[in-house]
Length: 183
Image 1 (spheres, one colour):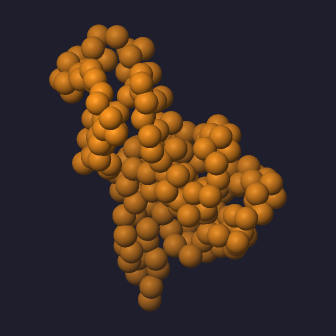
Image 2 (tube, rainbow, N blue to C red; image 1 turned 90 degrees about the horizontal axis):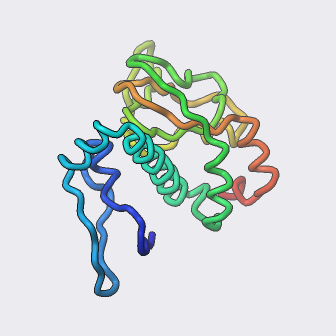
């Protein structure tokens, strides 16, 4: 990605508490204004609208990054991905909640905004955690694409917020952009 004048960077690690997910390097001599984390958090605590703006920006950046890195959405132009992003809806999830159940069809494509989920497969009567998905992770796309039952369950292991592109919108997307099926 390219960041220009007036844009924000470094907010992902600050707001998620996770390690930085990217390295930023200047392509030319630049001036940047730095807000230390403690100062920014203090300002956000005093002025709730600042915190809301940061969360909204974080959500948009995380979703944009997830779509840009996804093999399904990578070929799309930035403008097309922005239109797709507008169709996602937030969903709060609790610890232990089953978002998608193995053997049932997914109700949409999900992106982990905050928190974490485990991919769980049933094997010989026991549940086996195949792997975790953290902020920016996508799931539910295979069930939607194949119009088939999910091959694994998705279980919340750290409460948070998911972004969901409803199945209906995903299906319309595939009709509009048939190259998704090829990918």
